Image 1 (tube, rainbow, N blue to C red):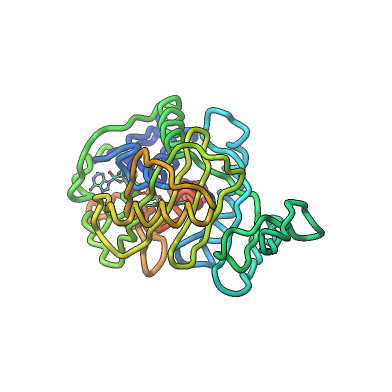
Image 2: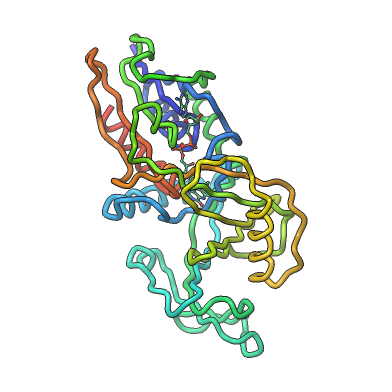
Length: 327
Ligand SMILES: Cc1cc2nc3c(=O)[nH]c(=O)nc-3n(C[C@H](O)[C@H](O)[C@H](O)COP(=O)(O)OP(=O)(O)OC[C@H]3O[C@@H](n4cnc5c(N)ncnc54)[C@H](O)[C@@H]3O)c2cc1C
């Protein structure tokens, strides 16, 4: 008989765990009070990039495993995953290309005055038309781009095809989950702060503005303040962003104005109309992603998988596979 797993949470972490377990003979039930677009995962941009998550010595290997899985998924046109050139910039000095990025083929971009720029690739670097008086250096690499509006539904469908189900439920205490489940998996994101009283979790609020599709061949990111990114998707473009320690999930009109203004300035375009605004709380954990096993007083096992900060998509497959190994 198939073993039964209850997963708390239907964001990218819970859904990916659900798929991995259900496709390996587990009988999976996801319990969640929010699904799809309502979750933090539904607000994400989302590109593969190890950002705002700890600890680095685990985050980089997990990210690289997930890179492989997402690159494979990009071959499936239904998945919402594609490969995109990401250009990572800084506003001050020379940006250092991390070793992991070099291993993925990253190359430096020379930012030159626009009158001298030509879009031709030169040896080891690419000369691009300079973005107006904004960036001093950058690097480019090809990464998976995940359209969350498609991908979360894709994962949910894959889960159901493998026999899993998603039920609407709010869980106040982990041990209230019925005893006929063999294992409980906690993928509750920032919700883990209340669910398992984890005061180490910090809400890193992120807001994005969705604007109409614009002619942008690359994802443009600058993590220096003010955080700025423009992510082209199939049907629209995501402008970001913000990252502040804050619990408020209501959109801020001031943030929207600042995001659209900075992105338009960097891209050298007129400010586009805003289709919608999304806010999510990145589940950042000061002591690092929690991926471990806990025994409840009644002998059952809980596997915690939360605290992925600004990199939940980037870490999703590696963490889900580790959850399966523990289970
Ligand atoms: C603006 C923004 C941009 C981002 N960009 C990127 C990016 O480019 N790349 C990237 O990798 N990451 C990005 N992130 C981070 C990423 O979105 C998060 O790391 C990820 O969504 C966390 O996923 P999760 O499944 O752990 O949590 P969530 O998506 O928050 O899901 C938690 C789930 O648990 C449920 N839940 C919680 N508590 C309970 C409870 N008590 N009972 C029942 N259900 C409960 C919730 O309803 C929900 O279903 C971004 C985040 C934001 C906000």
